[in-house]
Length: 114
Length: 116
Image (tube, rainbow over all chains, first blue to last red; front, top):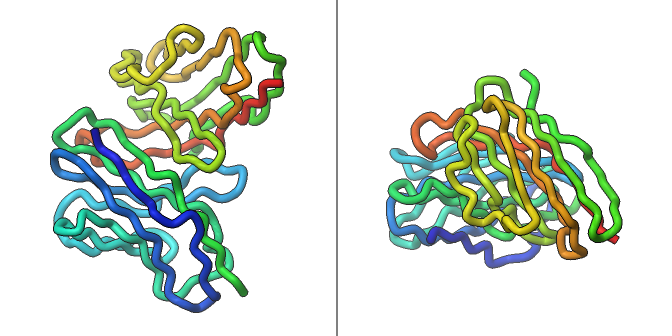
């Protein structure tokens, strides 16, 4: 079955510094990879996805993510973090040849310090 | 465009009582999902509908949980009877269902259940 690992519980970064949130995945077929963000007491919001093509994908709010097949990773990045980026970030993976179920990681709390 | 609407946002009940959650997906989205989110965890799928058919309900605890999606639009998730361990946020999501799994999910704000 597909799964996602987000190794860090919390990521602290100073405002204006680069932000990276790590994600590694496991699937038997082709991975469809997603990042979602969750603000307090809100539902998850889609940020970006990788299905095929260019390994670097760009998404909402200046975020981007790089698909690395050899390392089975899909790290989320932002060149310059804002205080408003403080939220919970979830990585998710679907097995493109499997049961079509979307598996989420446990999430990373990002805290951007002014 | 209206998003996924869920109600109620918050519900507090005594254990052994029944509870029901309602979800209205985005218009035109034929795929609907119910997820369970425990504190500090990622969402876990309970059930997925394609139109009115439940195509993935293997993770739904069928002894106490039930769901329906009449006419392939709105959906209801029911717990009867509720247990203390059911305290969590119940998320509804929808997607267009095209391109087999390549589309993103759109989530509602969730229904937070507290069982006392």
